[in-house]
Length: 172
Image 1 (cartoon, rainbow, N blue to C red):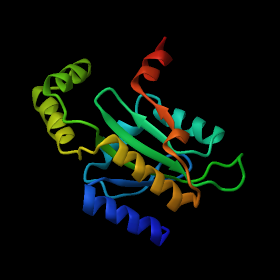
Image 2 (cartoon, rainbow, N blue to C red):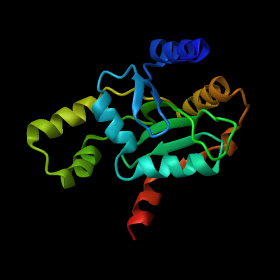
Image 3 (cartoon, rainbow, N blue to C red):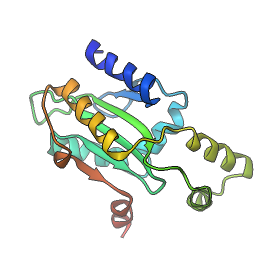
């Protein structure tokens, strides 16, 4: 991995406790410093988001912010190959929470999964361990990630956003 990106990832973990990821062009994990990589990978790529991220990468060269109804956010950046037809590797940071999790909201969101009480509380506990980062600070970190990965400056207004409302719209 590029030493500049590695130092940036180290800084995010040390200063903010934010996990970092490197994926191949099919979004298979090549590197992560997450202590719960399987859970965090499902939270990012589940519910059809893998295909949405890949589709977005084929259409655009700007960072993508992926969020969900629990308040989780991810920043995803594709390493551009120079050929628009070839998708490069992906770098991601997250998950982070943009606010303190609400216990009742988390219970309601997990209810459809029919988890045992033990698994539901384990999930709630693990979500509660995620860093709480102000959205504007997280967006600044995505800007820096994009610069380290692609050497290009971007603005927050350039980002592509994928939100829970879009998840519901896809099901209709």
